[in-house]
Amino acid sequence: MDHFRDRVFLMCLRVAPGHAEAEDLAQESFIRVWRGLESFRGDSALSTWIYHIVWNVCASYLEKKGRASDFIPYREEDEEDDGFFSYSAPIDDQAFKNFENRQFITALLARLAPAQQMILTLYYLEEQSYQEIADVVGWPMGTVKANLHRAKERLRALAFKEQGLSG
Image 1 (tube, rainbow, N blue to C red):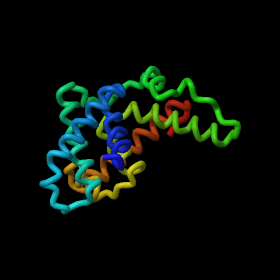
Image 2: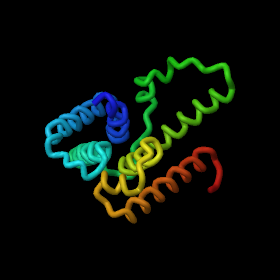
Image 3: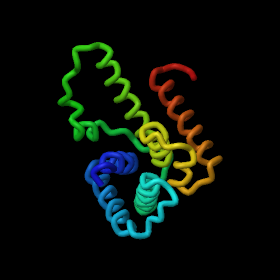
Image 4: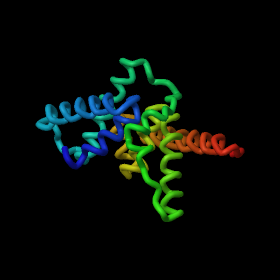
């Protein structure tokens, strides 16, 4: 659990509107992992199996909340919970620019559909392969590739729009 705690929480945070709900989703995910551990056959990596459970928990949450929409609004008050406003800027200009870029990407990600956020998280942050993502979400590999491509294009379009550029 210690090894996957932050990763699971990050995935849950992509669909939940706040930290408390994300913590509840992560806890539910770990409860399901614990209950199903005996049935884990080792056909896939443990991480793939765990992410599959998290995917299902998050999908169920979205269905119950009716929030499987294409747009999740970005709210500044969510950043306050992360200590964003208490952050002291580094002296190094490049480090500050990197920090600003991370904040910009985080804000853009929040505007994507939850499934797109999770696919991008699995691919870029968790460094999962197409096949591993297909195993997690239960989609054919072609569907994973197409959804990942659409998510990247949507993210790119949002970035260009936010910066007042045409893309």
